[in-house]
Length: 277
Image (cartoon, rainbow, N blue to C red):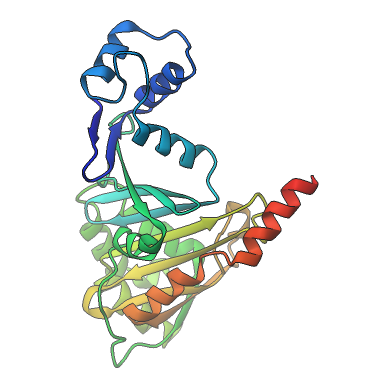
């Protein structure tokens, strides 16, 4: 059932309940049992007026200035959060790994100065230095993606898949030579999570979006994929595409997240193009 938390400015809804709220707000017919449930939770009053916090959520997520997706994977499975910004308001989701697609979604409201802190928490950012022996390495992107995706297929799959990948490195990555092979073995054996963040502020992926791909390796530190650049489409990944991973500190990850944000000039350019079209 839907829930409203005005103190912490949170709303828990299913997609169906969100659609029912839209219909109530627009004066369209709705199932009376559903309307009563929304009234019981305070999302709608007896006159059919939708709570202001809900209207704020709908306004931001339907016409955001900036949208961001945060995809993570780890031992408990994958999770996909979304974030929307409009003027000074931020709404975001904070899902559990392997959440049921029909489960209620918790939307949290915050303010623009907190944006980087929210992103850092959603990717699980912690303080880490670069290990003394760490060096950048290059591997086939298709092969490494296949291994990480297999690791995160379901809860309990991470450790067995990681063990198989490292034990059979010669079979999976026979074309990778030293010293890249040594660094690949070290990072895979310590890999605790992977993250992919995509920031979008307009319709043109080439100019209105930026992204990053990150590995968290615990004591092995953070590894940022510096090539190929995100965001990537399926067509960008061919058998010949190589991925380069660079060891970075926690502070460098913070700066990389900050660099994803569009500048004022980029936002103005998007608005001007939309007005001219």
